[in-house]
Length: 469
Image (cartoon, rainbow, N blue to C red; front, side, top):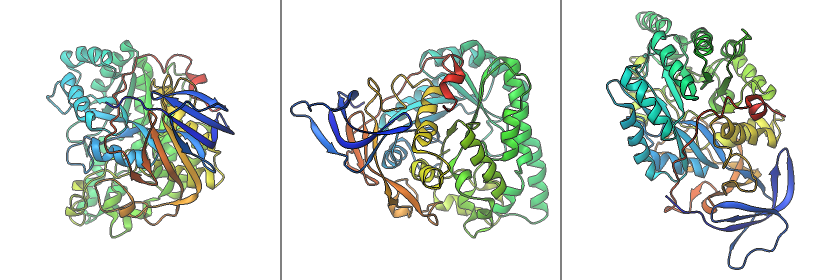
């Protein structure tokens, strides 16, 4: 773990709420202690931010940097994060069948010692045995308060649970004051459609898309929301990909619990046409990218606040893993794409630069909201006194490199190489240390911290905490 450093960021336009204010920022021992005009303490390093926007570090609430077989681990995935202006991410500790939940969480914490950025953990739960339900209490005491379940086993390595197990885990999460999450896709419909497509000779990535139409997401979301409400558990929907899914998530059924929805930058930037490309396997993920109309509806959800967060679902696989079954059986193509490094420039280019969002909206969606939802807003989410010194010195008028050679993930392809992205993190500051400049790591020694969280945050004054002003 790296202790905090001290630095003055001078001459920038600092984001304060929805306004950009000419101000300097003082970080002492990793904490923001002054914003405005002040005399810099003697001997403290000065970082020139003239002509730049000073943003809070981005928070990616959805990454996979420990998933078996994936290209990135905590070391490489976190380097990609900070190069793109993400100073905190939330990783998933995975309880594969037969594993002890507490052991899994400890293993992921240990792996996190290699992280260049701060991190928190979600726990993926694959059973509701008495031992696991009891262990969930100890996991919460250890600072992990959000629990994800898979409603499908089609791509998850046997992690899928039935509805009874899902409901039982949600009830336990409610008892603990935590947050339930679920990968929402209808397992049986996917299996049926996939078998039919293979039998009809549709074996490439186009089949992956066809086997997972919006129906399979929307139906599972509606079911999961009902179960969460009956269980009394606040519910978070990750990687929502379709307009139908958004309607199902927010359908007013008189529910008692908060339902929070996240989408991903790839759903806002790309369309299902990518699955017809020769390299379509590189875009295989679950849920898959949907139609242009779905993209329109997701942007509407971002703009009107129905979608509260954007998470990258970063889980890249090596090219040879992706290509091995690309032309024989789409069911065997590893599911996952890179995204943590490009989260900020995608959202800036397609959100702010296009006129859909203000810079304040972007920071709210990609920093403040995830901090509030996941119990980190005492230290993360805004440029505020007393919060961690995590900043992005941002140039909105510079191109962001999208070629594989520009990026820091441990892969040799890029899903955004054909897009022109704008917005350069000229410098990324984590806990007062300059850790990256212009997409390159400059402090190899910096290490992040595990961020323990307390339960109950989402249920306390939820509307005030996450709804756009």
